[in-house]
Length: 89
Image (cartoon, rainbow, N blue to C red; front, side, top):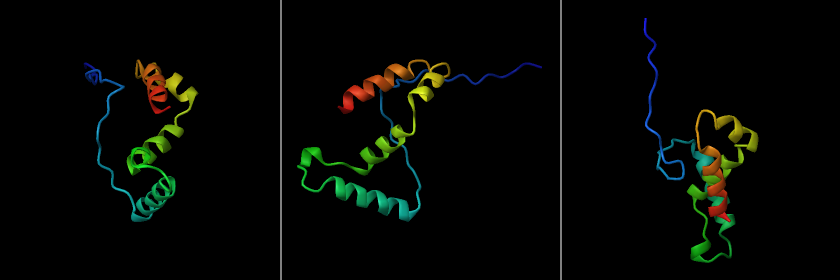
């Protein structure tokens, strides 16, 4: 019997995509408080959003070793991470 392989089109790893998340209310409220704290005294251009906070929190969970291991499954992820790091500085 033949094996079916999942074939997916390559994605632009430096692109962005919106997703919807369902989270418990206590987590949402905790994120809102952190955003409020981060924005104290900042100007409008420097304001942090919940999206920024979630992105940075998730990025912190991916180590350099993780990126190296993922490179075989997701070619180009190392370069995409490097570019993301350059962009956030």
